[in-house]
Image 1 (tube, rainbow, N blue to C red):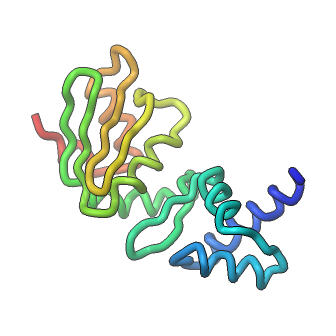
Image 2 (cartoon, rainbow, N blue to C red; image 1 turned 90 degrees about the vertical axis):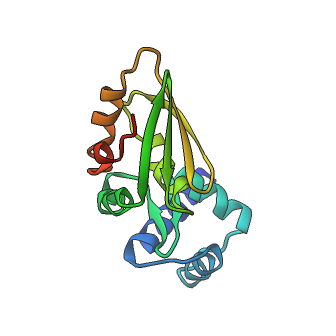
Length: 152
């Protein structure tokens, strides 16, 4: 069964990287055309396991280093960032918070423990002692314009 999961997940990545996929029904259909049948629940689990996010107007995107151009595009959707102790609030354009939070959550060495995202707001929980400058420096490669959005 493990092997089937890997095959299915690789097929999902290949499909998403080959061109835009706007919804799970379209993805399931393209998988079926490739000879892989799956349920909606399994597809949802696979998307989560593969760290794939849905970006409004773009469809599904991977939250891996290959999606750096997506991160750069999302940078313009960040409206402001503000710190309070070990917390940070990031405001985005409507519908972008989950995609931005997903990119932040999947960084390996990072001063952020985790995120909670709504439609246009993200709460970042910082590691103990993490300074705002360290967080901004860590976010800059993902979102080049982030320092310009700082509210003091």
